Amino acid sequence: MAEKYLSVTALTKYIKRKFEVDPHLGRVYLTGEISNFRPRPNAHQYFSLKDDKAKIGAVMFKGAYQKLKFQPKEGMKVLVVGRVSVYEASGNYQITIEHMEPDGVGALYQALAELREKLEREGLFSLPKKELPRYPKRVAVVTSPSGAVIRDIMTTVKRRYPIAQLVLFPTLVQGDKAAQNICDNLDRIEEMGNFDTVIVARGGGSIEDLWPFNEENVARKIVSMNLPVISSVGHETDTTIADLVADVRAATPTAAAELAVPVLSDELLKIKEKENRLVKSYVYQLERQKQRFARTQESFVFKQPERLYEGFSVKLDMLVRRFQQEGLAIVSGKKEHMIEVINKLYLQNPSRKVEQSSQQLTHNRAQLEQVIKAYMKQKEIDLGRQIQSLDILSPLKTMSRGYTYVTTPDKLLTSVSDLEQDDVVTLHFSDGEADVSVNEIRNKTDESEEK
Image 1 (cartoon, rainbow, N blue to C red):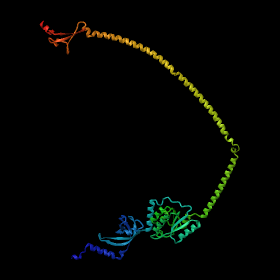
Image 2 (image 1 turned 180 degrees about the horizontal axis):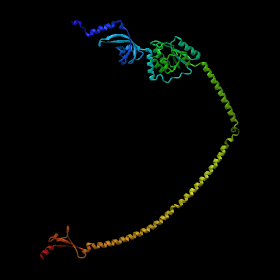
Image 3 (image 1 turned 30 degrees about the horizontal axis):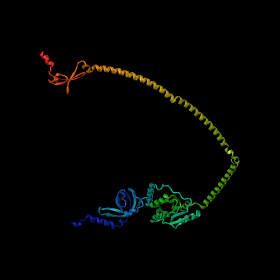
Image 4 (image 1 turned 180 degrees about the vertical axis):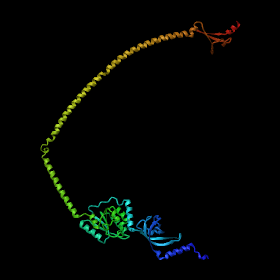
């Protein structure tokens, strides 16, 4: 009974095998709207295709995705070619896309619009343009060696300006390798470094034929060129990225050659006209100088040269007189000032001041002597008075009236209590001293008690 049941893996492999062998699913053409698109750089892309009623998972491997000439976006309607298969791990069926292009507009037109938008945001179209040299000596031409383009350019340059040297750099102008070949030749031109102008040219064709001139690397190389670049790609109605970034755009290869070089005969005619104008101008200037020389010869400077100095002589006399007058005025002013200073000095004569100071000194000295004498006399009177006062208060004066004082060798005795019987004391008189011995001591307190 269990043999009738299949595993999930076996069933999934069976269904996957059915998808792979079905001829209708091996190459499927679908149209739908991109959904759940999240760009993954340098990797496989996983998203969905849907319409109003259904949705299918889609995978686009890195190799196929890198060949796209436009950038897929969420919600974009596309046309895809691929095969339908089953992814065993999840059991979901999906379409593996091998080719994809926008629905409603070709992939190349979409890629061209996106590249133009990108380069315009970067400002490559609005960069300052380099001026073309007026008289180029060597012109580099980047185009195919066969075809009408190079013949038209050669014919036009030979007719207009045969002294210019044309150097052809044979270039692929169509196909997958053309863009790189264009860049390589532009690099060679810059490395050689002896060219004045570069012409990048190609005849008309479809957008696929002109596509190398819409490649980003070609556009950036033209922008980085140090030489001015003239672009003439396709017909007048065709506009490539190379035309937009070039310094000058020409509608046709013939027009490019006409822009690159002038007309030699016209330039020679202009040179001849300028030569004639220069000669006429020189003759006119020479004539004017001759007339001026003639007038100068007739001038009084040469016929009567002394008149040249008359004005200076008169002016010199006037200046001399003015100098003398101003000098006298200055001297007179200085004299008056000197007299005024002398008078001031006389008034400030130091001898008079010395005499006055001497008289004042004598007077002050006499006054000082009088004051000193009066002061000394008063001091003598005061001293006499103080001597009398001291004499009155002197203990010698009192002792002369019969008073004495008693001392021992080591102290002054002021009371009988300081004495003891048989003590030897000294009596001091106004005219001498006497040593006495104490025989008896009588105290006034004891006498009063006895009474």
